[in-house]
Length: 297
Image (cartoon, rainbow, N blue to C red; front, side, top):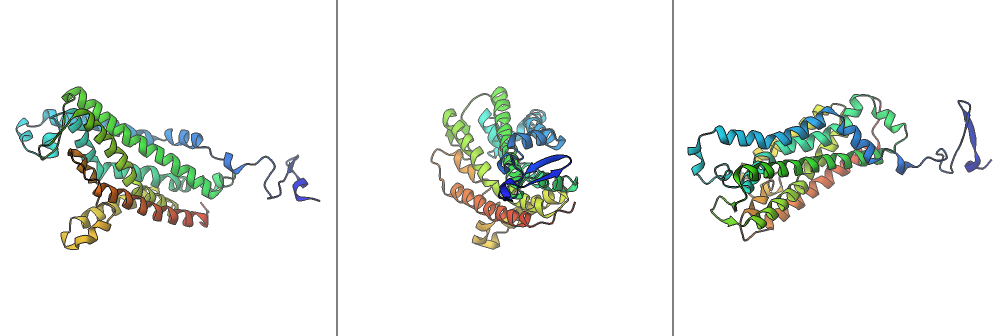
């Protein structure tokens, strides 16, 4: 009998099979749609808490500035300049969040996505649905990227909104005293947000790799954060010289070059390339690891 016409009886029903052996009507591309996975992730408490904290953070920073000593705002640091305009407040919020908070958020969304399914023993049921392994990994990575990007935009937009409401829409003033007009400052803030989204892909790739390598979500998230912290520490050792340029966090705040009228794009270009290069390597390792992983939990 021809394979395409083969049928078996299961639970009283006849199931026709296609030439590739799959049940008739089965389409791999229809399994685990992004909207379904996104809805699943949005219902999770950790997602709501993470996004909620990004909304609350600008208000916490504003409260800290309001109850702080006004005499401390006469310097030329980013913290001192934060209250000069809404744009400066938004930029300060980004700088305060870049090296830890945003790393934790991205690591949480990517590191928890597969490892949590394994820890709940639900991963094998997703694969038995059947959802092809690479598609499952891709769909989860896409949703994690959407949540991470939304969180970054949410933080920037929230900080800008709070800053404009409280400090007004003045110029973007750098620590060197350069003043960037409001429209150009808005553009610089938008570019800084996009740069961070690109640069942080390295932590996304690393967390995804760790997520498919362990059944412990905390281990995947914590491992990615620890690597980032170690990179930051090594970056402070000037004796390493040019070797520091190869650290994934070396260009994490390269968007500070946007605070001047004459923008030097060199550091940001290197930072974007560094982030994408590390992301490509870690993502390839994640695909290789997950493709042949023995799912027993």
